[in-house]
Length: 214
Image (cartoon, rainbow, N blue to C red):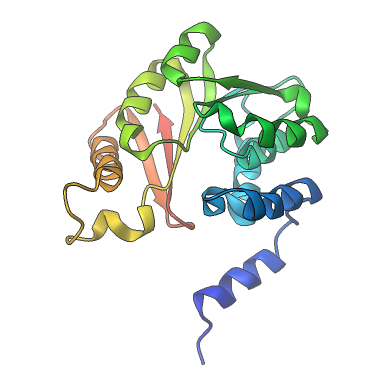
C-alpha cells in the first residue's frame, strides 16, 4: 500500500531537526487558546524558514503578519548575531499571547515587534531589507508586495505564504465573491508577469512562493 500524505508528513518530521521546546509549547498553547491555530507556520515550515535564513544570511528581515510569532522565532534562530527581524502585526489583541514567548527566546534581541498597519510602520523603520516574509491578510498581498518591493535590496528575497490557498487558486468553482482566494490569485498573476524578479512556488503545506529580486 502506498504511503498516504499523512504518512509522508510524519516521516519528514521524524527525519528533520526538532521543532524546539519553545515553539512546541507555543503550538500547544495556540491550539488551546486561539480560534485559528492552523494559521501557525508549524514544524516543517518553521524549520524551512530557519534554513532560508541560514542560506541567505540576511542582516535585516521584515515580517508582515506576526500572529503568534511562531515563524518569527524560527527565523530569528537562523539569523546571524547582530541581524534583526522587524515583525509587524495589525491585531494588537495578540500581544498578551506573543510577548511571553518572545521574552523566553534566546534570540529575543534579534526581534523588533511593531503593532499597527505595515503601511504606517514601514516608513518609520527607514530600512532596506534582505528578506521579507509575507503572511497576513490574503486580500492585500498585491498591496504588500508593491509596498515592500522598493525596500528590498537587489539580490534580496521575498517569501509569500499561503499562495496555493488550500488548492482554491486552481478551483474553477470558487466564486468571485471569495475575496481571499481572489487576492491570492491576483498576487500569483502579478508575480508571474513581473520581469524584475525570479520566482518559484514550493508546494509545501499551503504553498510558499520564493521571489528573488534581480
